[in-house]
Length: 185
Length: 185
Image (cartoon, one colour):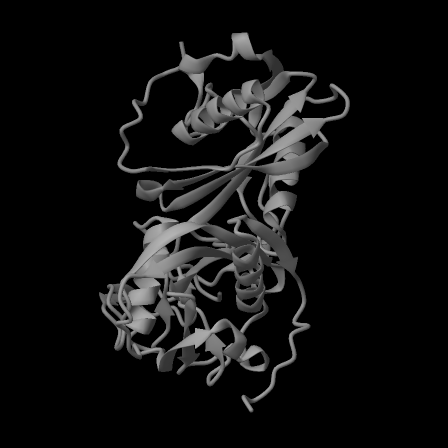
């Protein structure tokens, strides 16, 4: 951030009065420009025991597999965001189920929220952000080509819970980019 | 938003290519300025069956009571944010427990996340954003002077669960400003 979005003046970085962190502050109009973590919301869509995965058409992690997920928009709920992302990325209409995972992705300034979901029919396709979309049997999930740690976390917990016949909420934190960036094999 | 925070040019509102919603877009440098919901994180701090509430010193809802809660900062986890807010608003060091509530506050473009928490000693005070901080017995909670619906929701579910001896996660949505704005009595 270089300029004030309110008045166009150059911003400066300082700790405002009664605050404890440096912020972008406008010296002309006094607007404080806070920056806060964003919510990324998705789901694990299940059709008769197979899981719908999307091959990413965009960076980061183009060519790797993910569940449908993306940034929550103003004016929607978490569940509505998860359903919308499935429709956009996988052209799939899902029924959102229970909360599966909440992941603090600290270094990325994101919180990832993942739901269980079901597809009532095997109707899907590649949306604009996907190169391909496919239903994977559990034993065929391409673990070495999963796009993000939070997606692997959600998928593994989903499968574990299913084998136990339970639906739990799993929480974890990821910090620093320890996930090795590779080109898909 | 009137000016591009990247280059200072006046922004325009349009639907970018391959998008579906109007965004603030800079015609000079092509930066798309997305706006997304913010996370508000708090907790219900319990000391031997009494609950720590803060009387708000700032708008909105100055003079009304709340649990410690505020905007999550970049670089922290949800639980760390909840603990920090207790320290800032109530000068109280809490131990964060289980997830209590997730509330979509749709009209405010916020998601509120509330945890259970415990105080190990009755040590607290009014932080900068609080006029007063006090431990309330359940039967003395000033329900008519609670600042926000999400806070009332979290408190009521906390108390219900405690009476049942369970710790569940409760989710709900609030939309439109149906909460009547009054001056505190």
